[in-house]
Length: 121
Image (cartoon, rainbow, N blue to C red; front, side, top):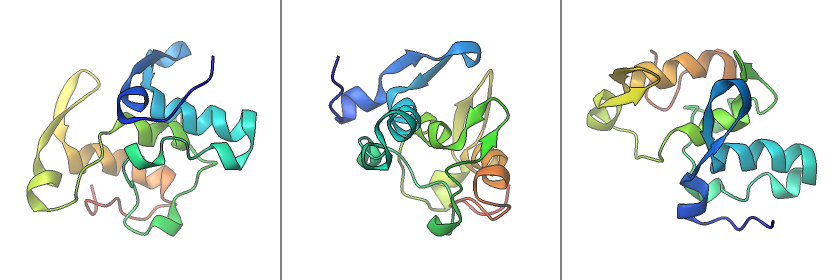
């Protein structure tokens, strides 16, 4: 079926192999790029967050463990980086951590060793 990017559609959790599930935004980024060409990889871009402090350092071809960075960015709700939002506790896997800590774990691989939008982990 056709997929139309909307906030509701891009936030929907979909099954994703051995890693459990991903929001559709992450899968649309990943599958869109490899199945439909780069022109389709941004169908959910209005509904995903910026991971890297320097957007140009985002490596869309990198992987974080089993997860491609293009799909990882869909795991996080978009937010406006700041002291309070980066220090906020979020659910991350089976535990609660600060958003800064969670993003920092992905930034090393996905941002080429550069900081996340929340700074160093």
